[in-house]
Amino acid sequence: MNLPIYLDNNSTTPVEQRVLDAMLPYFTNKFGNAASRNHSFGWIAEEAIDKARQQIADLIGANNTEIIFTSGATEAINLALKGTFESYRSKGNHIITCVTEHKAVIDSCKYLERMGADVTYLPVNKEGLIDLQDLRAAITPATILIAIMYANNETGVIQPMREIAQIATDHHILFFSDATQAIGKTQVNVVDDGIHMLALSAHKMYGPKGVGALYVRRRNPRVTLSPQIHGGGHERGFRSGTLNVPGIVGLGKAAELCASIGSEEQSKILHLRNKLESALQKIEGAYINGDRSARLPNVLNISFEHVDGQALMMAMKGIAVSSGSACTSASLEPSYVLKGLGLSDELAHSAIRISLGRFNTEEEIDFSIEQVTKAVNHLRSISPAWIMKQETNNSSK
Image (cartoon, rainbow, N blue to C red; front, side, top):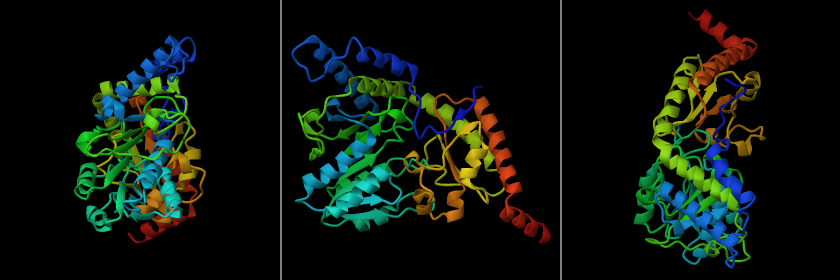
């Protein structure tokens, strides 16, 4: 067992060796530009792009012509939201999303509000789930888009995708989902799930950083988007720019591996997560955040009463975890996702997110249980609030 142990896979994942092996030739002898249609270097690159497009389409149940390559999920989200608003503005200006969405969605919606959009931010219950009645009630004749993430990056909570999709279909509204955390960790099928646009990122599924994709449905309904990056008309005009061939090859290979080992890997990770969760929830004053059943198999978001999450992470020098989204980890404010679930500032500050991955082992989980328990007990031994609570409890017995 090598230290430190990496338990922050929702932040990013290591590049799988088979993914790296697939990428390497496209940095050197297969270095062509996929847009160069006049010689073999370009043809080889274009062939690699086409293969990756098919690998991703196969993973999510799409047609390969519906996959648009981007620099990552953040760009894909911006293209989906801003592109929809600009393209469908003549039909309406209303967008419905959720308070616990990733900042890429929240901040894009805030921008669109300044551009004239009317945005409804649906609340969630204490389990992190939206109320479908709230969604129905929010719809107006001006609603053009529902944007709800598939699985939350901090809690792993999975929203009722098919029910949301049915509501969108019944009202002839487009449905976009940020599935960045869900892809490769749970079964996602854009047709069965009724999703019209979907964002994903390679580095969350053992591929390289800096490459992602946006699924854009071509039929029933045909989705049209205004491009956000102009210059050359690449990617069916949706996203101009020379394609990152090595990165796209890596994303395709990562998708292929997820498709081939998905269910087996998910079962193994679920076993390890449940073992970890079962042990840690035995600690007094431990609270699991988010729904316990509608959840990704690799995520455990847990608060320890009267233990500061940042201090806990510092005390566990042999384990890498996080206090929430990697994109907001520099903030001293409590997680807006956990606050959205109704947690107090104290419990939100005391939360840590543990996210397991492909390469974690049973031995690492046993070590982590020991280290987390030891660190919690140590921090509580020097916590005046915890000591006072124990004294109060003892005196009342």
